[in-house]
Image 1 (tube, rainbow, N blue to C red):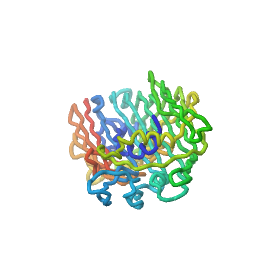
Image 2 (image 1 turned 90 degrees about the horizontal axis):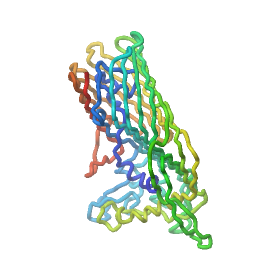
Image 3 (image 1 turned 180 degrees about the horizontal axis):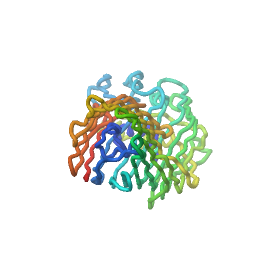
Length: 467
C-alpha cells in the first residue's frame, strides 16, 4: 500500500468498488431463509442445509454517502469541449458549486463488509439447531472530510482546516459454531463461538491536517500521518529524497510496500448472542449482538510522518479517458509522487503486536403477524454497526408474505446513515433445494462499466441443498 491508496485515490476508486456483505437484512423476517442465524443466532430452521461453496450466500454490496457521480462529470455538459469525456470535480471548467454539491458537509464515507462462505452447514440436534461455518471476511472503510475536497478543488481560500482522514482494511478467516434452542413457549435463545485467524489489517490516519497558501503554486501542509500495518511479511519500501533546501541534504521516506511469505498474522475470538421473545400470537421481538470479539495481531509495522510542516504544490485535474494526454494513466507517476509527498511518511518502526476489535453489529427487531391473514407479517429492524469512523445505522420496515409452504419473501423500505432505499427478497425452498434472490438496496443508474453512480447497491443470490 502506498499513499495513493488512502488519499485521493481512495476518494475516487473506493466508491466504484463492489463488495460482498455478510447479511441480507431484507430477509430477517423471512422464516424459510436458511441464513437468518447470521443476523440473529437464536433463529433456527425447520430443515437442515448445506451451502454450495461460495454460491451458498453470494452477496454483492457497497454503501456510502458519496459516489462516482459526485466526483466525475461529463465535460460536454459544461461547454469544456464538444466531446463527452469525463473529468474530475477538480477540473476548472466545472463550476465550484456543482463540483462540490454532491458531497456531505461532514465526513464523506464508503464502507463495506465481505463474507465469502466456504462451508456452511445447519442441522437439528443436541436439543436445538446447530450451525458450522467457515467464512472469509474482509472489512474496509474510508472517511474523508468535506474540507479535503475543498482543498483539492482549491476553492480560493488561503487556509484550509481539513481535519482527520481515515482509511482501514482488515481480513480474517472465521470458524464458527452456533447453537439455538427453544427454552419455553415464549423464549428462544442462541449463541455462536468463533475462532478468528487474522490475514491482515491496515489503518491509515491523517490527524489535524491544515493547508496554508505560501505562494501561487505552493502550500504549507501541517499535520500528522500514521499507517499501522499488521500483515505477516509486511515490509516498507524506502527511497532517498532530497530536501527542497539542498543544504539540508537527503532523507528516507516510504515509497511503497512488499509482502513476503505471508500467512496467518494473528489470532482472536468472537461471539454472537441472540434472543427471540414471543409476546403473544401476534407479536414477537428479537435482539442480537454480533461479532463481539478481537484479534491480536503479531506485528505492527508503523510508518509516520515527522509532523513537521512541508511544501506541497497541490492537486491537479486529470481526464478519465485513456486516450487523453492528461489521463489518469498517463499522469499516474505524477499523481503517485504528489500523494506520497502529501502523506510524507518518513519514519518506520516495528511497534510490536496490537489488539483490535473486528466491528460489532446490533440488531433489534419487532414482528407483527396479521390476525386476519396469518401468511402476512410486518416487521421493523434496526441495525447498527460499531466500527469507529466507519459506523452506520439502518432502520427498515418490511412486509412479508408466505403464499405457499415452499415460497416466501417480502418488500421493505429503509433509511440509513447513507441514503434511503427499497429492498426485496424472494425465497424458493421446495424439498431438497433452496434458492433465493434479494436486494437491500435496488440498483440505480450505472456507468457503461456497470459501476453504480452512487455508493449504494446490493444483489444477493444463494443456492443450498436441504434435508
